[in-house]
Every structure is written in C-alpha cells, then in structure tokens.
Image (cartoon, rainbow, N blue to C red; front, side, top):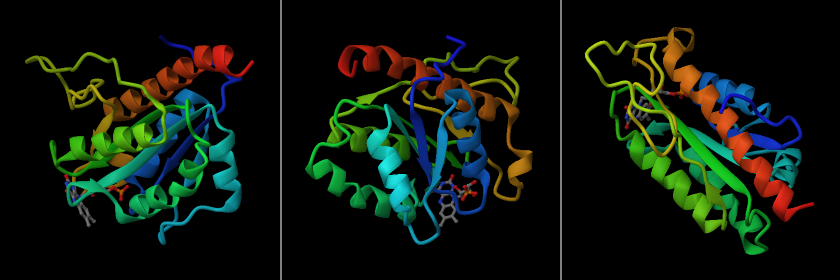
Length: 194
Ligand SMILES: Cc1cc2nc3c(=O)[nH]c(=O)nc-3n(C[C@H](O)[C@H](O)[C@H](O)COP(=O)(O)O)c2cc1C
C-alpha cells in the first residue's frame, strides 16, 4: 500500500517533550496527509483541536514513552477525552498510534497497547503496522521496522541524540504507517458516512 487518500480526514494528536516524538508525528502526518494537533506542555489542546478530533475520520495518537508509558501530558488529554466518550463522538472512527523512546525496548509496547485500549474505549477500529520486521544479520539502523513492532510504529532515539539524528528507517516506518491509516479510513468512510 503506497498511496493515501487526500479526501480522508486524518488527525495526529501527540505530545513531545523534547522534539523527537514531534519529528515522528511529522512523518506520520506526511504519510497520512493529515493535520498535526500538538498537546502542550501542560497537557492541553485548543478548542479548535478538539473540534478537529470530533470531525476526523481517523485519529492517530502519539507520545514518548516516559517511565514505561505515555507521558503524563498525553494521559491528561486521554482523561479529557472522556467528554467525547460520553456521547460516543469518536465511535467507529479509525485509530492508530506511535511512540518513541531512548532504549531499544524501553517498554514502548506498553504505550502502544495503551493507545489501542484508548481507541477501544472510544469504540474505534485499531490499525496495525503491517511491515515485516528487519531482523536479519544484514539489517541496518535505517531499515524500516527495525524495532520489530506489529501493533504500531516505534522509534528509538539515543538519550543524547538530537531529533535531527533520529533513524531514517524509524521515520520512514512512521510515514508508511500514516499512509496505511489513511487508506484504512477510506473504505470505512465510504460505507459508514456517505
Ligand atoms: C521522564 C522521562 C521518562 C523516560 N522514560 C523512558 C522509558 O521508560 N523508556 C525509555 O526507553 N526511555 C525513556 N525516556 C527517554 C525518552 O523516551 C526519550 O528521550 C525520547 O526520545 C523523548 O521524546 P521527546 O523528545 O518527544 O520528549 C524517558 C525520558 C524522560 C524525560
């Protein structure tokens, strides 16, 4: 799957403390041809951003993994999403999620599982990554899905590295995931919302 549907409305709602997850979010949004909605340092989103979430066909969550889970700013956003949950505003939307952390493992899986659970609480449809892992002797740092994740894209940023030094493969994995989420949202839209 290499193309995304420009008429599908995808939003990427994410938090980034130091810019690495922001770079990953940009790659996802590029693939999905979607809009970026940044959760601020206080864990807040503008009213316009909440309206964009309500109107979207697909919502992609993003956060760094801090202490084995999503950053508290993302969790504050997730708790605030109890408001649209109450009136099932996000039900039947397509959902995805991505994370980034310093360690190769770093308990990133817990963050992605949290995102999938949050999507489930909203009655949404979760999109997997569907890129085979790069896990042979010839695998390189800039290969796609070098983290070997299935549930969604993971990036690894060395603790002393700037966002500009992130793995090209991790960013390409994120971009391809954005394409996939947008493509998955298209048939859903045509059957449910014509
Ligand atoms: C409070 C805090 C907790 C962290 N916990 C983890 C962790 O559990 N696992 C890990 O691999 N990295 C951890 N890190 C490293 C960050 O995930 C890593 O620096 C990441 O690139 C930060 O993304 P950001 O620039 O988008 O904030 C932690 C960093 C901070 C500041």
